[in-house]
Amino acid sequence: MSMKATVRQVNSVTVVDVSGRITLGEGCSQLRELIREQLGKGQKHVLLNLADVTYIDSTGIGELVSAYIAVSDKGGQLKLLSLTKKVHDLLQITKLYTVFDVHDDEAKAIGSFQKTSRA
Image (tube, rainbow, N blue to C red):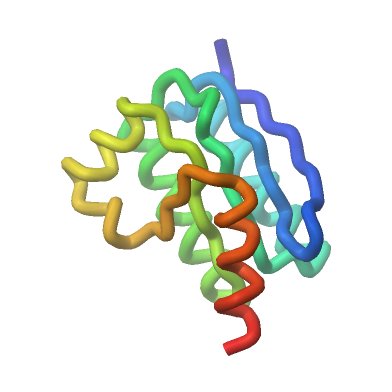
């Protein structure tokens, strides 16, 4: 199963619900285009919901980092929501868990954007 993503707005936060595999090829380019599209619309608060991601390879991890940098460069924030055990473990092994702001609860994750955007 390739990657699928749906986008929804919750207040000022763009929530991207990702499912399937984020791997070399279509999944990564699809995620990259989606992030660029949201930034182009002026959306600077992005929450990637990874609850239904079944697999992510090194290219997919690289794409998450690239998305994080792209959003940060525009003065925004990218946060991760509901990591599966596999994705969580991979971020721990690569020491990227400390780079991303990771949440388990969507409402709290969305609220964290409001707090940091006022600062």
